[in-house]
Image (cartoon, rainbow, N blue to C red; front, side, top):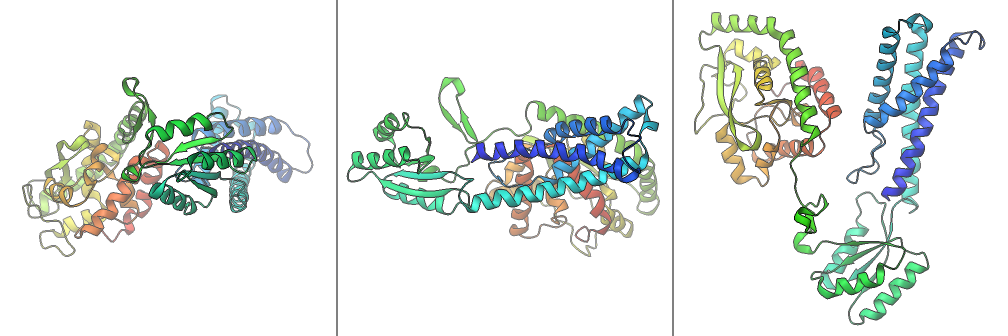
Length: 451
């Protein structure tokens, strides 16, 4: 399946590059009577299309995900096209050749490109789904094994959430293993199946004998995890210290990703701090005049790797709780001052956390940091809760832009927030961060969950 989808994405990349080149040429024809004078428009269209092909690929629009194989990745494609147009305009400015292309051509080309990408993605997704429903996209699987493991694996294939894999046949090794293997080999050589799943609770010598036969056949072979490990997420196969092992968990945002994330925080955080400095000074003065000291509220929070740090916010309450019991703010909370209510509603009380970002305690985007007492409470009652501390906490996050902002007064609310936080950790990308920041800005003023 992955190979088929990769080929489809390769074809789509060529088609989209041709369409984007054509958008520039069509824009020129629409805006001019006839083809002449063509000028730099054909070469400009070609350069723009080639640049777009590369940048759309960089933004991950042609990546095939095992978790979401039929994700159209429209946002990534449009981001790549926007970046290509921005790079094209930057090049024209640097070379002082902006007069070679009219503004109307640039706008029309960009608009046509957006339309072309949306149409190409919609048509390709429809075609891939059609292929999947006909069984031409996913693998044709045979399952061989014993007992409960065989039954569970066969049922799991039938319940494929994407509807792409097809169960062709299942072979029980009991009571006659040789006959079962012989029937399977016959199906493989007849071209009925493209993949085999081995389902054994205790592989032992049986697995070795099966592989002795199947490694000589033109078929993909997978070993289904035993029932005891079925709920454990397997990321990859690795060889630490030369020993074959399954990777079950890993440090997110490691290596180059951590460098990119830190650069993002320093650059964007620094720019934002400069831009909001006048507003921060005004808010600090207003708090001093109407509420008195202290201006800032400091509280211990859990951060990266479950270590504590001191978070800074503008004070919005009459109390500054920071201990073993920290009551959450509620709607119409009497501790919140009139000025504090405005600051909390607009999230302006969070602005000092930009300093935490530059210091490295926090990130612009990530799971929101909770008070130490709240972490202790939910860490004991919600499985996997402390996994949100595998990355730095953020000023905003994926949970917050999906409406999970404000009080978490029930375990269900916290579990929902945790689901979004863990999704963000597993799917992080620079583009994902920029999307969350953009969504935060657009919904901030209309948020009714903040109080």
